[in-house]
Length: 428
Ligand code: HOZ
Image 1 (tube, rainbow, N blue to C red):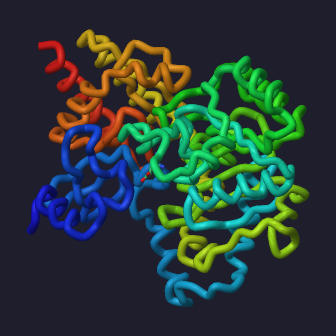
Image 2 (tube, rainbow, N blue to C red; image 1 turned 45 degrees about the vertical axis):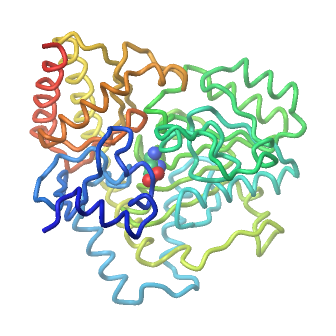
C-alpha cells in the first residue's frame, strides 16, 4: 500500500500539480496532501489507514456527514434507472421546486454541475438582463474560477498567492470593480462613478473564502439599496452558505433577498451539482425563452439530483438538524477560544452556524485585509499537529471549517483536547 507521499509523487506524474483543484495540494501548510480511501459519518480514513475527525466535509457539501444512508440509497436507485439521459426528468423539477420554495427571491432555477458554472451563468444573465457589462465584487470573495471573478479572489487563489490569476485577459478584468468587504462608502463611491455601467454586485453574503467573515449590521441592506437604485442586480453567492447556515441559506437567516442566487455544495448531497436562480422575469432571459445562452450535457444529472433531493429532504423534514449543528458548532467555537486563551495564543474565531474559521490573530476580522493579518505560519503548524492528533482541517488559514450532523459531542471534545495540546506547545 502506497503512503500519502508516494501517492502524491505518482499523481504528479499524470495530473497537473498532482491535484484536481489547487487548494488540495497542502502547499499553504507546507506539506503534501492526504489521499483518502474512505469516509463515514464524521470520519475520514487515508490510504495509510489513519482515521481523522473531518472538518473539511468535502469543502461544505457533507452537512449530513460522509455517506449518509438516505443519500446512498437515492443514488443507487437513480443509477439503476440510467446515470444520464441528457433530457428532462421529473426529479429535476422536484429539486427545482425545493429550491424555489426554500430560497427567498428564487422563482426559477437552472441546474449546473459546479458552482463555477453557476456563478459564471448568473453573471451572464445579469449582463443580458441589464444590458450592461461591469461587475462589482469584493476582495476575498470567491465565486469559482470564472475569468471576470478571478480578481482579488479568495479560496485557493488567495491561499496560493494568485488572487489575480494569470490567463485572465486585462480587458475582462477591467470590467470588474473590486471593493473591500463591509465598506459601504466604497460601494457608494463605485456606484457614483460607474453606476449606469454596472450590471450587478456579486458577493458571498457571509464570506467563507477568506475564512469566515460576517457582514456588519446593515451592510447587506445598504448594498442592496445602492445596487438596485442604480438599476443593477444583486447576486448572492450562496454556494457555501446555501442550506448550510439555515434552511434556505443566508437569505432566510438574515431576512434579505437577492435578485439572483448561486447555490452549490449542500444542494448536491456530495455529488457535482450547483444551481443559479432568481426572479422569473430575470431568468426569462435564458435560452430557449430568451437570448442568453447557457447549457450542459450533464446538467441536472439524475444521480446528483437524487442525492440533492435526498439531502435536502432530510434537512427539511428534520429541522432539529440545524439546531443541533448550532449547538455543536457553538461548543467548538467557544472551546477553541477558551483553549487558546488558557494558553495565551491570540486567536479570533469567526462563525456562522456550522461554518467557522479560527484566525491566528486577535481579530476582529471584517475584510480581506483583516484576514491577511493572521499568522499563517502558525496556522500551518496547527494544521499539521492537529492532523497528527487525528483531526483533519482545511489546509489553509483562509477557508471555513464545516461541522456536520454526523459529528458527535465526543468528536467536538476530542477536537478541543487536541487543540488545547497544540496551543500548549506553542507557548512552551
Ligand atoms: N470552493 C471551495 C472552498 N473554498 C474550494 C474547493 C476547491 O477549490 O477545490
